[in-house]
Image (cartoon, rainbow, N blue to C red; front, side, top):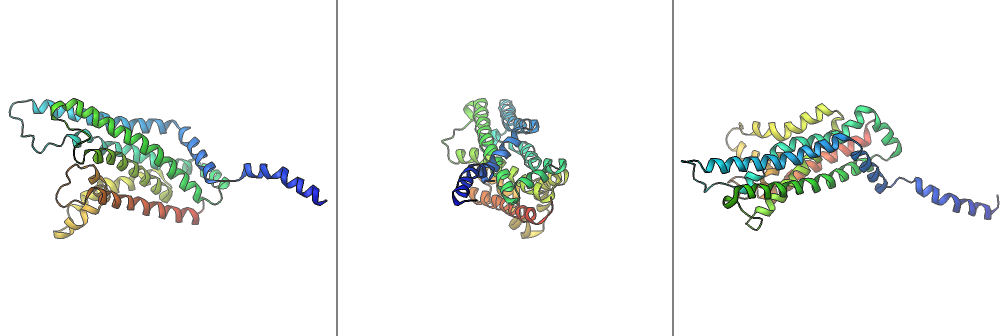
Length: 276
């Protein structure tokens, strides 16, 4: 074959080869399509947002009714922003499950083998799943947090507060960020355990059981360890007035992000080393 023919052949094959090349952007696009092709994604996101908004507004309505009764307790310690964000405690269950299912659903069906065959370097799959989930969850959960706050304050009326009050805007935005990191923890645990039930149990053990066990630690151990446990550290960003002994709001959130970062790092190592 002449030099001219080789050059012509390369020119012809160049665009086709480029179209087949695996890039991070194309992997993210495929994960975006896979995420929205599942009905469970929509149901779970609606459940998380609905719980955040509905539970917060209902609790504010209940508190408004109670405060109108004769003999109601003094309202000096009442936190109107915290009341409207109370649904986050329930919403974390739904968003955590979504993070786990984003990964373990592929392992349960065997689709992960096709995914890793298409992306043999493997780590782009992890970055793509984590990136797509973070964008979707942060957008919806922050929007749900602000909606819950505005709805709750409308119900509370004169007893409510505003976003301009000290620490309130940070608390409301922090609620959405906290839920996003909970889901990201679920993504990491999904890659580590590769089993839906096991990953969900591990996630809620970290978030719900570990703080309870921390409270029974003896002496100074409890006071020193409990503020650094995952959910205790993460939820302080939602407190307008953190309690004595708690971490500062953004310090606590940074500690919580550290748990998620370690989980994702372990997931990356295991994804590279283990068979699909």
